[in-house]
Image 1 (cartoon, rainbow, N blue to C red):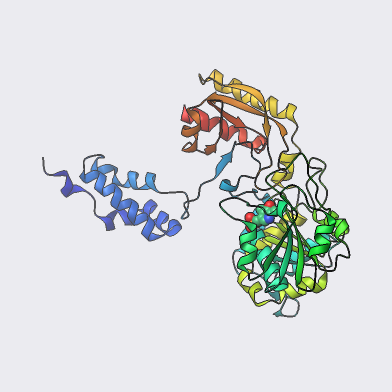
Image 2 (cartoon, rainbow, N blue to C red):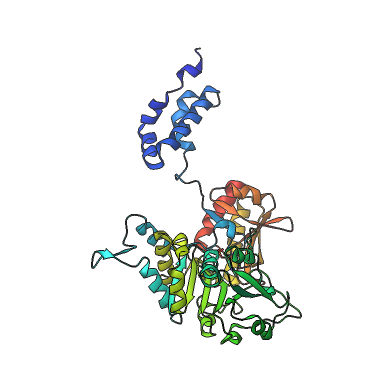
Length: 429
Ligand SMILES: *Cc1c(COP(=O)(O)O)cnc(C)c1O
């Protein structure tokens, strides 16, 4: 027998195979060539036969030129930061696909002249929150805060209660962001208590604005007092409120979560929020409030560095104008139907020999919203080892480990995903 290495098909020959060539058109030459080289090496090493090089190349190719994979969120945390927070609605996905090419993001098609950028998304935001005189959108909540701090308080003071000096996650400390803009913090009150008199005493000619921050990921209970936005009316400086989660109206399931409309009605001059939390849209920072203040922010030189792209604007508009978002649907799922889904799944898995059962569980909003709120849910219970296996299953699933068992919480998943969940578990088993 001759040395099999001599018979490994050459790179050019593999690349001209019709299916491989089609894959190169779709995924890019470089990525496909890498898969060819890997398959050739495996043939040289005797791991596969030389006749399998083309099949091996095709099998190793990814579905997409980007490496990110869809993951089923079975954690019971509706807004999971590591999973990209809010899943977009189909309407938002369609909108960003349409906007991906050349689009009229900054063009008035009726006149052929340049138009205001993102006007439709801003109009949708104002239609959703008529209380706001004007709106602006930047890249995320942190950008909204830093734009407000820079434009309204650089070299001056931001009055902030000590109990609202929040760390969001991944080491993001809001007070550090604020001082990085060149504003000074005027801390008032204590960790657990602040009074209106503290605000009155702190506001003076050097005040840029008074900031209220929603403690969106913790609760302080016991001997506490905070000052509501309504009490700060007429304090002598603009009142800026960071509500965090992006609810635009009060939500029946989350009565304690602040919303833009109520906070503006209470007299806030400017409200800041994220787009990808409870609003259920793309990553964005929303600024809503008095026209004069919003104009000032919009025209600040830094605003250009925080400008959102056409994809964000399209997805945001569709989120605001389109049907109920996945996160909204998740908030409204009732425990009985979740439990029925969990039981059906557990039965199907047990019938296939996987030790599975169903039980009631508790989900949370997560991702900087509704801290301490437990949402009644249901889960499929599996042996603990499944948690790891499911991360590399097809489709990938992120489960929750509790009391040495693997829980697949259904709160964040629509019923359409049950089949994928079942397939993933059977594959992992
Ligand atoms: C989440 C959050 C932020 C940060 O928003 P990003 O969109 O993550 O930048 C700021 N403030 C509050 C209160 C939050 O909950």
